[in-house]
Length: 270
Image (tube, rainbow, N blue to C red):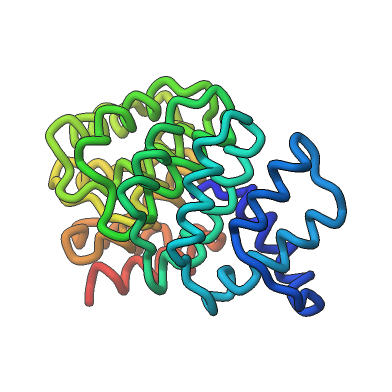
């Protein structure tokens, strides 16, 4: 998944967390962001690290007061405040995802979904990221909106994030499976094929037609497409066992992808 802003923040946090001692809560943080909009002073950057650090280290859960502060920030009239609040929420939910996904209160979830329509690309991108990793999975009723974003958003980054969130809908509906089929068969658009395959890194497809097209992508001339196909097959596992000959061929002929191919072989044969 494309998580550049989140990864950048995590690197900053890693460098700063050892010296940050003072704590606070998200209510204080949103108030400070609101007061300094549309800029951040050095002191505010330090305060962001201090307050978010315990959440990012998974030592502190979001409390009721935190959710109220987040709701306030997400609904603020100032786009900058909505942007910063959405980025903080996306960072926290992403950090918790693999260990213990966070369940959003209904009010917060509705506010996040409302941000899908923002003109600010950062706001709508972080909104989709948050929905994509929240506990309980992506609601099926968001499929139409996510498909539209995946097809038409002006930002390729958000199109990719929308596809990743779309892949998290379980079970996928007919329209979503058709979306995967349409884009995986479009061999002339390597970028879109790569985005679709990348979307399966967290959640494997279950439709046999889609799995077959993922396997076919191992033969693509584009290295990125092949790499993402291998990663998707590692996630799919046994249902993609017919990929074994192609994976073995890649393992034996492409040194740069040998390790990935070995991992996929173990996945489909276990």
